[in-house]
Image (cartoon, rainbow, N blue to C red; front, side, top):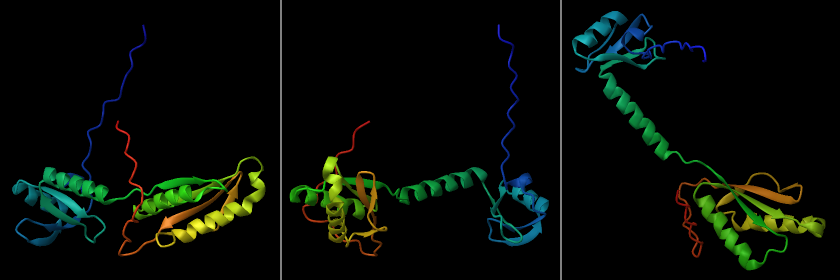
Amino acid sequence: MFPPRHFHPRRPRVRENVNEAIRAREVRAVFPDGTVEIMPTPAAIRRAQELGLDLIVVAPTAEPPVAKAMDYGQWQYEQKKKQHEAKKKQHVIQVKELKFRPNTDEHDYNFKKNHAIRFLQEGNRVKAMVQFRGREIAHVDLGRKLLMRFAQDVAAYGSVDGDPRLEGRFFHVILSPVKTKDKPKPVAGAPPAPPRPQM
């Protein structure tokens, strides 16, 4: 038999900046009727509780801190809603990779170029790479020319971050989307986005 394990009891979570957890001696209290008054924190808490509400610090860096009398549950709901809306507006920037060969034919080049334009229009970065195999590494200049041509062809949508770099058997360049108020229209004939795998 194993000896009994003793777990420390969980401490109740303390609501920060709410009611008795407010550490400031006095606050600028805002009440539902619109009155604003600088008063000792205990007095502001009592007045809020008389109204059936909680006293919540909404501006802790102010001098004195601003505390509002409101329902704590409703305040929590509004905070979560704001965070959810902010996450929806955030765009996660990804780095999309495109691979070329020194002797990439024109059709394949245009196909990948259109993909790059679509990626940049979506706000993502693009890493274009030329891969050398075997003796192709002796023709690094072909890779550089291909990348410079690629950067010029998508210049309206992406700007080059630094010069092309050679790492091992890969010559690569990274492009970031151009920040403009009016985004350019999608390229005619650009390939549709590949379907996302279903989970």
